Each structure stands twice: as structure tokens, then as C-alpha cells.
Image (cartoon, rainbow, N blue to C red; front, side):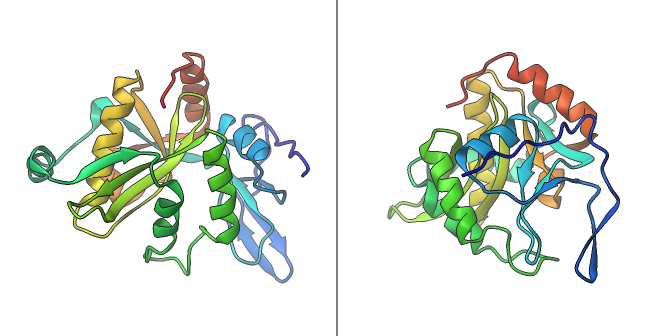
Length: 230
């Protein structure tokens, strides 16, 4: 497997459009194309604020968005109804007990404004290996019968949790998984997490968008703290 020499997102000249065949794609957030999602490449990418996001018909794109969504725990907004549910829930939460199952469930989520999902078979295999190497982690939500009913997964980028995807089978299970994750990360000294791109889900929790350069500064500053998140 070959290593990817990723450009520096701080100095890379991002293009607005790039051509593949007869099609033009917006590439203002893309830093590189192609290569393998090996453990080495994934670790190198996340450490630099870069992540892969498969797009059918294109060589593997690696992203470092111009606008990056982050959730500062000090700005976390939890609706009263969800707080009440969090206090009385009979669901059980675990970390890294069933990583692959969480990713596979995330791959089956129907997503608005998207055809299919970026979590394909190669993605699942690559991130499972990344998990086995100790870099990718999951939160699982279980009901009283022991069934997996929600969860999320992401990557520890040197002391910064980068959220990838979440799913729920019962109402609010993914939201409660996020609250569980935030409490866990706070117990390890973390003050924020990377949500990559803004969604209505994270906007409701108080996430905000910051410029790429500000994100990279924030990432580097936090990495210097050498937090042990898991």
C-alpha cells in the first residue's frame, strides 16, 4: 500500500472546479484525490484535519472543508425534553463494544438530499481496521433486550474527536449517544469535537462553523495537549 503525501491545507491552492470526463465538480473543499484508505493514510489525514468522503464515479476525494463545523461543549444546547429523557433513560451506553455494527447501521441510514451513502464496503472495511489499530471509536446504545438501537462513530485525531456518522432505531437514541460521548470526552479533558460539516442535527445542539484556518489552528493547539480520549 502506498502512502499519500497530502498537501498542507494551510498553503494548498484549492480549485473551485475540477473536471473528470465530461463532468465538472466543485472541489473548493477537496485537498487530494485517489489513494487507499489504509490505516497509515487515514491517521496521517485526520492528524492534518483531512478526511475521505467517497463520491461515486470519482477517485477517492480527501476533504478539508473551507467551512468546518465544530461543537464547543461550553455552547452545547440540550432541549429540556431531551435532558429529561437523558436523566430517566433505561437505555445502556457502551464504547467500542460493537464498532463494525455501528458503522454498518450508519451506512443504511436514509439521508436527505443524497443519493446513496459514502459509507460503502471499502469504507467499512477500512474504518474497521482503523478501529482495530486504536484510532476509530464508537458509542453503542442498547435497549433492555440487548438490541443495538443507536450509536455513532468517529476518529481520535490526536486528542480531538472527529465525528463521522450516527444512527438511531428508537427515537433520540443517536442524540443520547452524543450526550454520552460529550460527557466521556469532558471527563478526559476535551472541550470540543469536530463535526466536519454542519447539519440541522448539530446546529440544534449549538454547533458553529469556523474557517478552515481557524479549525487547523484549533486542531493543532488541542493536539499539543496530548489528551488521551479513550
